[in-house]
Amino acid sequence: MADITFKGGKAEGKVSPPPSKSHTHRAIVLAALSGGKCRISNPLISLDTEATMDAVRAIGADVSMDGNDIIVECKEMHVPEKEINVKNSGTTLRLMTGVCATFDKVVTLTGDYSIQKRPMLPMITSLYNAGVKVGSARGNPPVQVCGPIVRDTLQIKGNVSSQFISGLLVAAPLAGHDMTVNVVEKIVSRPYIDITVDMMGRFGVKVEHTEQLNPMAMNANTRHSFRDTATVNSFIVKGQKYSPADYTVPADFSSAAFPLVAGALGGKVTVTGMDMNDPQGDKKLLDILEKVGCKIEYNGDEITCTKADELKAIEINMGEIPDLFPIVAVLLSTAKGTSRIYGAPQLRFKESDRIAMTEKMLKALGADITGTEDGCIINGVEKLHGGRIEHDGDHRMMMAAAVASLIADGPVSMEDDGCWNVSYPGFVEQMESLGIAVEKM
Image (cartoon, rainbow, N blue to C red; front, side, top):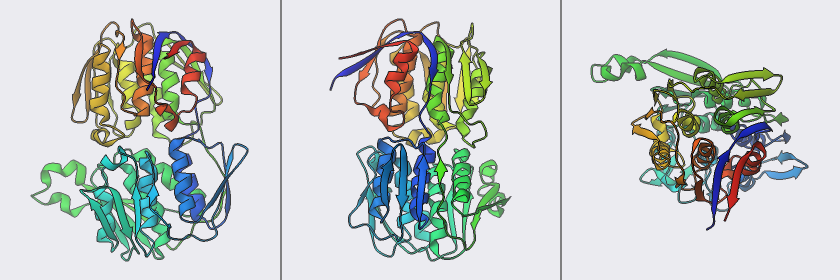
């Protein structure tokens, strides 16, 4: 396969980041469960969201395009005639596993080689304990589920992936009785749960949330982990059904991170179409950029990041914003001093082991970075150098490396497999429009 090489340069101008992938996934699934016709405006059309469209088609939805809008209509769901292949989309896998666990016949969900390495055991165990018949080899896809969900409580640990919790929440109204999802241990990536709950409300299902003391936390055998187990977060769904709704997808802060950090490293970049009132956790990037010394300006739905004279090292808890890890590591690689990124052990279970991959990528470019169990330590260097990196098809790794070329004294090359289309169609063209030199071979 051919290579693509980023030769640095500058980053100045204005771009429109793509719509939110997380919101698009959820909107497609909730529309299919609504029992009517829904219009999804400003969706992200990417490899991952196309996998979700195919998945809901498999359960009876009619999905079509009207201009740039997605039209979803599903009068009656049915068991898929064949296995559901989610390709490389972990969100599709987790959301649709919950939905398919409510069918009374076996449904198999699988995906590509990367997906077949993704953990599913916490969700499988939760469904099994609620009466669902499940099957899996070593807790990874392919996964077989056969409902119904007979119990009124689902319990799951929150310390691996918020997608498990979102999958159970989305399925809860389909159980046919009141449901409570109890989450024990600390919830990672909590803002994604907030997005799920908010969007369920827009499609007619109100979710109540309570937080209470976990009596097991005071047991002598578990006292050492008291901070993680002291409370149980309960999400309660009472006797409701989804209803049709039209929905407009907001711009994606996790995608906007790449041009914004490009501005922080290479000049001045404005991103458009941003909604500061949306519950996306990744808007915390703006606080990170200010802490390292960049200037952030707001003008309606536009956000501008201007390069600092000197970047400052910081400590940052990434537990709620794990998708930002690779690009924040790039941002801090030339910051003066020692930076510490922590709090996100779930990064070990993404499209790749993103902690190990980020460490490998930045070391290949001359950074002083050491991976830890839940993040990394970075000693800022004056400048990166060029080199070839391996992204293993992980879109966020590839895009972070492209931005890193702005602070490298030589070109950064990598395999040109188009993986950025998973979340950011047009990424390469937008980087070129800002002034980054790109060469395809």
